[in-house]
Image 1 (cartoon, rainbow, N blue to C red):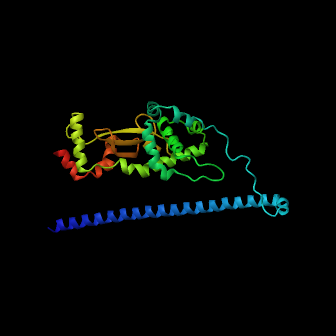
Image 2: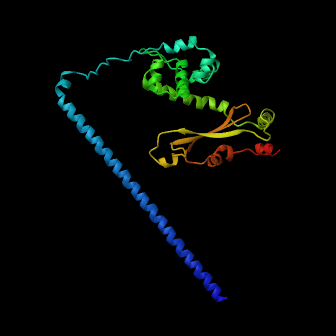
Image 3: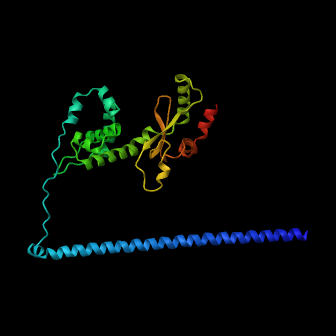
Length: 293
């Protein structure tokens, strides 16, 4: 009996000793990482101070070199801009608005003219800009058309700027603004989780239209090509030999999206993407009960 007790005590002491060693290693590693971070912060601070000092010395040298001009003038006169906007042709957009049919709109813009007008009316409060004395603001219809043309054709911004008669940087900024407005304003309205009644209708629709019983959604994914990111680029290298992120979508029996999940690295397997999506994590009990019934 005493041998067993001594063995247990010895085992506990060994376990305690190993735990102390592990805790000491973790503490030492944490202190080393903290010391390294402090050193990096100090180096960044001093490099910034040196850069600012060099800029200040350079600016002071420029002022000294031009002191005669600065003394002779009371105020510093800013250089007059030679040109405010480059002349560009904007006749292509009115031409297609007056001549294209609904079929041509569907082929090129991937939507009909009525859908485009609905999109413009929905986003008009968020995309309307004020006219200034220097130039007229780009209309909402042109802003939306620039974004849709970029998304539908994947054409470079330089060519799109020539088509619509706007600047290159303006074209890029407009695309980002319209995409952001669509995500903020329209996504909650059109892509949302169906209710229990709507799930029953979807299941009934799959059964009647496609002859698939007990189906509440068709799910699939696709790879969106991107440039190799500077950090962890190997995680985005997919099996097709490209760098990408994964877009997963779920549609109902009428091929309308009711759930999307985008942003996972391209190296992740499709099953892993599904297990990490909100569709898998936050599935309602009513939906599961409906599918079982």
